[in-house]
Image (tube, rainbow, N blue to C red; front, side):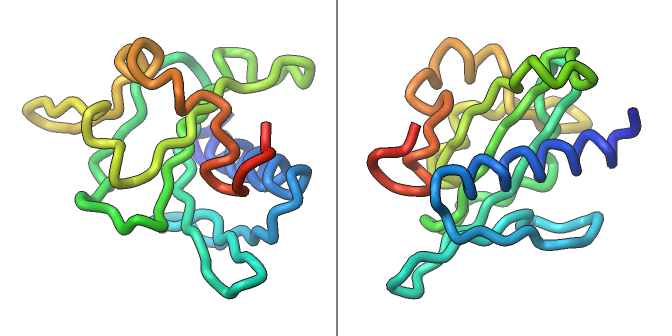
Length: 139
């Protein structure tokens, strides 16, 4: 499985969930982009989503996360937990508003990541937080 295929699998999985929850969402196409999905509502307002997908349980690369993020921008951190080829195993997902992602980031000499360990231990409110994207009543 290539990194590009993992990213596409993650983006389409998130898009599928958004449609299942009734969102008007569209995938943006391209390889190097900061917005993967656009969500609009009846009032014409929109949210942007950057999906960060991993095949295994590691930290998410974050060199392209720009802070501060607009209030309508969200990050979906998704991992297939090493079971990407098992369709019966759903991925683990955290949905974090862009303006709240910084506490989960760690910076090293050559790169920056969103720490899975910190997100798991201190970001429980973001796990499966689909209501961040589609409003109250979502899973």
